[in-house]
Image 1 (cartoon, protein in one colour):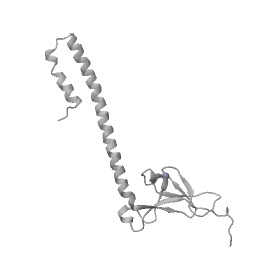
Image 2 (cartoon, helix red, strand yellow):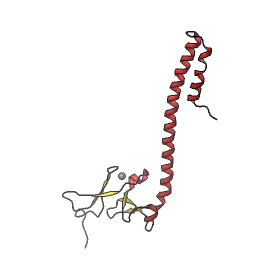
Image 3 (cartoon, rainbow, N blue to C red):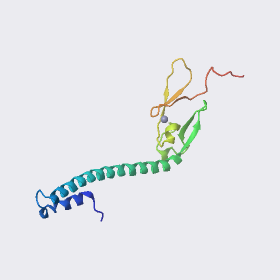
Image 4 (spheres, rainbow, N blue to C red):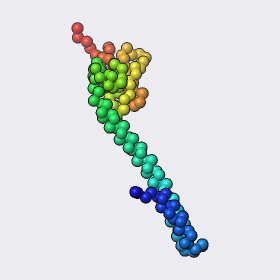
Length: 148
Ligand SMILES: [Zn+2]
């Protein structure tokens, strides 16, 4: 079984009965206990960091499994969004037609795109409230010449 720093610290407590008060041994034992307390704090911090990293890896692995239910879709404007593959809405637990930010999807995050109203524009704009990306959803109106 692995010995942690707290166990070592407790073992040093038992040494005091063999140490002469005020002597060199007492000074060194006190110093050792201070260093063990510091090591214990670092150990606790590393254990917490390790748990957080394990959770991050688990989230990444979960996303890698879930990402197979999604596909890219090009909007009439040329912009790309991410949608659930047709027929896989149940597996992905997402309503049909919901569109996600392609930029955030690359960062393993599903962020729903929302329509944005623009004054002085007849076009439909979409915005990602996570990364702030904003783009035109439909074809640009009035800025390109149309050939009829
Ligand atoms: Zn985004």
